[in-house]
Amino acid sequence: EDQVTQSPEALRLQEGESSSLNCSYTVSGLRGLFWYRQDPGKGPEFLFTLYSAGEEKEKERLKATLTKKESFLHITAPKPEDSATYLCAVQVGNFNKFYFGSGTKLNVKP
Amino acid sequence: EPEVTQTPSHQVTQMGQEVILRCVPISNHLYFYWYRQILGQKVEFLVSFYNNEISEKSEIFDDQFSVERPDGSNFTLKIRSTKLEDSAMYFCASRDRGGSYEQYFGPGTRLTVT
Figure (cartoon, each protein chain N blue to C red):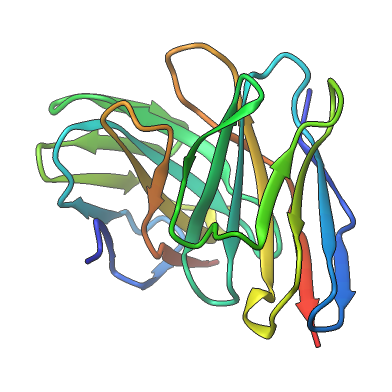
């Protein structure tokens, strides 16, 4: 049973066209939710950690939010260099293990 | 900026052979991880390691896998008898003791089992 589900699987945007990516989770005892960016052939690159419902984090054109059931990664006025796969992951309780979603592949056209 | 490094970048091996994948975590980090990503699939947790012992492992991490921190800098993943289905990208990650839990990933080793 998937604990982390991301949608959509793929998203094509025009440069400047804002949108949101979704990460829903079904775990109980969430310790933290993490967003990563992954470029082709590379390892995930850390973006944000969110710990509690209502929390928000921002970095340049990205803003991550968290509710009790899901997280959103909002991309404002994206640029072609924002094209990548965006992954979310959760840590449950005090366990030192992390579950990743399948990712959203974002393609921003100039 | 400190980074996690992994060697080799690509390893080709025959089925049944043993392979060792090597990682050098960021120097002041204390928690170490291995993940794998089969082509086109999600990143899957294999094992976490802290204080010279395994702290968590997934159901994927069976008896054919082992991890070791042989010295103060390296962290290795050994696959004893490789199978075709072990072909994947293997990522090492590390984090420090702080409460942020953010992990820093290496560039990965692509393992191809023929």
